[in-house]
Length: 371
Image (cartoon, rainbow, N blue to C red; front, side, top):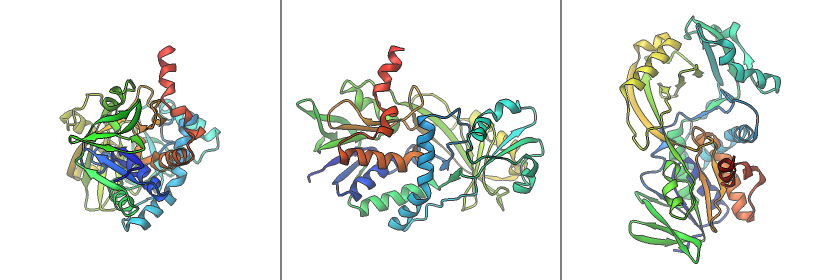
């Protein structure tokens, strides 16, 4: 089979890119070491929340806002193409400050957004009308009406159906052990002892990206960041929208589950559930919504997010001929999937890197080293 593009990694980023490239008529194969979305993409909470906690304006914040603005259409198109409802929910997100916390410190991110005219509201006086189950020790509440969510597991199911129907060849359980080269140009991949040729390779392997790149002399570090989460269930969900506090977020799902997350720990490739993290998440959730104390724990899980030294994604050409990168999205893979896919596809088809991607190219790492 003649392939135009091989994508290494079948998470939300790799699958979204594959779908867009296949829609443009390219012959695409995805190599995924496990099953589609089996790592960070299915372990996430599906929150589309660029504003909550953002430290300031800039190219990355703009990228996140633009991708969020695309999401409703992306979700509708994906659901129509696959027949899978990705459960896009638009009730907004509520950020709560609790008694004893430094209120000015906890909401300083909100002040510059208010001044910038972004969609954000102080609803402290209406908190218990909006979410009656929130603790009475709340002192401040900020509502973010454009911060939405999707059911990320269903999103991955939908992407698998949509991209394969568009003609993408999917190889699951196919670990790529090396990128192959021909006269210095990347020419394909090696997997399970076989070589597969193509015109262009995109590495979207999340936390597993670095070894493939280092073998080519590209010392680009993608760091695994462990996140642990819990799902509980009550007879009736006490909340109707995503809640954030400084130590926890709580996400209500359509099936009655309530997700509680999430920790961030740099512990290598150790993917575990720890007692201390579980206790911390449960205590923080019950402090925010006391009625969760009687909920049933139905699931615990963890995942490895792909982080970088500056916590920004790596998107664009790699510096090696015929090799593109779309990795290091850290906590924003679900959010940034629509825009990342569009920009990568447009850049490849037009043979010119989009200017919007330049702040996220590999060139910035040499600048960081020289500082």
